[in-house]
Structures are given as structure tokens and as C-alpha cells.
Image 1: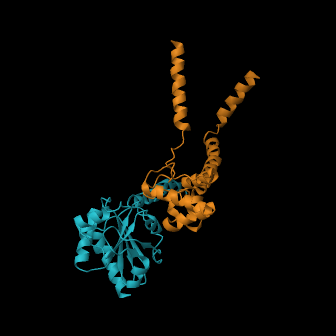
Image 2 (image 1 turned 180 degrees about the vertical axis):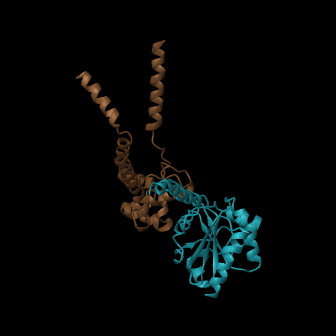
Image 3 (image 1 turned 90 degrees about the horizontal axis):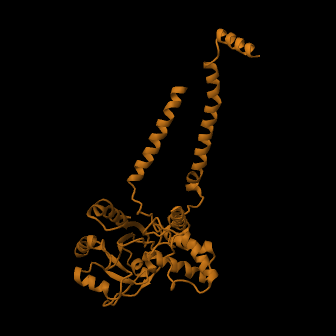
Length: 179
Length: 161
């Protein structure tokens, strides 16, 4: 009985250590999205400067296709990282990418796209950031995967890396297209 | 000379007091504030409960982040539109989840979180109780006097008496 009692602190230490060790691998910036498996928030954004068409939730749902919604801004440094990947997706017609230009000054978004290339099927101008808040966006870039019924199925926080694309996004897109 | 020392001590105390008495500076900007002071006071209370989602360890009352500013404006809009405090908070929670609440709500998935300190206290109390109840007995048993010692003790006591 006494010997057993001596092991209790060791046991507690191992359990607490395991919990902390698991915590070390979790990224605190990954806030779970409230939108998963819920329909897109309803929105209707005007076009950015130099474009004729804006972006609305009705438009995305109307297409009935699996799509990406990418929240970006010309001020967003990390958006540069994923931009080549988005361009490659657009050039190869892999999937429609809808852009939400988040809190950009008038004209800045357009200038950025002219300089680096435009991967977006359509772009909406979210100057006051209201739509981004409806999406629960915590920073740019963020990318949402939308299924054929217009429900949000996944949220990528931060740039889409090649690894995130290969391991998570592309398998999910293929699965959603089959269903 | 002595005077001067007292002065320095006094100043240090004052400085420390000022340091700890000062609350976190509010980030709310004058142009965000509502004209109605009662409504603005309610909004600032709510700001303190809501986490800035880009900075994470600050409330939106303290953060200068653009997103925190947007959320402060939303809180004020909701209150101006006649929302109760709970409704205004729910509006934000609906979009960002329980995570935006700096104080987690008491619900099924947080029972353990809230109960944990009490459980640790009970477990520690129980351990202390059993340990302390047993310890003196052991001491007495180990140090019991032998017959010879008992006689010697009696002899000393008799001598004194």
C-alpha cells in the first residue's frame, strides 16, 4: 500500500507532463471556425477599383461548385507566400478561387493584382471588414473550402503551403466533388 | 540626510503604488465612443470580456489591432441598436466561437475546466488529512519508553516532587 502511494506523484507528473507536451504541439492561433458545415454567411460586396463585378454569396452558391474563398489584402505580407500557388491553381483551372479583398485602401488591391497577377474568378471589396468578421476571419490570408451546396467545409488559417494543399485541401476538394 | 532617505523611500513606494494601481490603458479611440455615456460604459465592460482574436492574450478593450477596433465598433453598433449585453456578446460569439470569451462559459465541455481547481483542493485536503492523522501515531509508537526509562523518569519526577 505504501509503496503504491509513493508512485502516485510520479503518475501525476507523467499525466501532467503528457498534457503539457501535447499542448506544445498545438498552435494557439488556430481558432476553430464556427462556420464549418454551416452555409456561407450572406454577403454582397462591391467590386474593387477597375473591376466590373463584385462578389456575393448568391453568386458562389449559384455556381454549385466546390470552390475556395480566399481572404487577402495588398497589405498582407503572408499573402505573397501563397500567391504563386493560387496563380498555378488558376492557370490550370483547378478550382474557382473567389477573393475577398479585406480592409484595403481603394486601388491598392487592384495595383497588387496588376503587379503579381490575378488568380481570382471574382473579387469583392470588403473595405470596412464586416464580411470578414461574418466569416470569423482572424487574420489574412485565410481560405475557406465551400462545397457544392454552398456550405463551408474547411478553413485554412495562414498561407496555403504546398504541404497543406497536398495533405489536406486537395484530398478534401476531391472528396467534396465526388459527393 | 535621514530626511532624504525617507524621501527616496516614499517616492519608491509611490512609484510602486502608481505602477500597480494603474489599470490597462484603454485602446478605444474617441471617435469610436458613443455619445451616450451609459451605453459607452456598457460597451467598455463588454470590450473587456472579449478577446482580441489577432493578439489572443489581450481583450479588445486593450488592443490597438485593426480587428479589435472593428469588433469594438460592432459591439457599440449592437448596443445602439437596442441589443442587451448578452445579445451583443452572442453576436460576436456566433462568429468567433467561445474562444473570444476571455472567461470561458460554464457548459458541458468546460465542467472539467471549472471543477479542476476544486478537485485538486479536495484531493490535496484528503491526502493531508490522512497523512496528518497517521503521522503522530507512528511517532508515539516508535518512541515509546522502555521499562527502564519509565522507572528512571518516575525516579526523577519523585525527586522533584
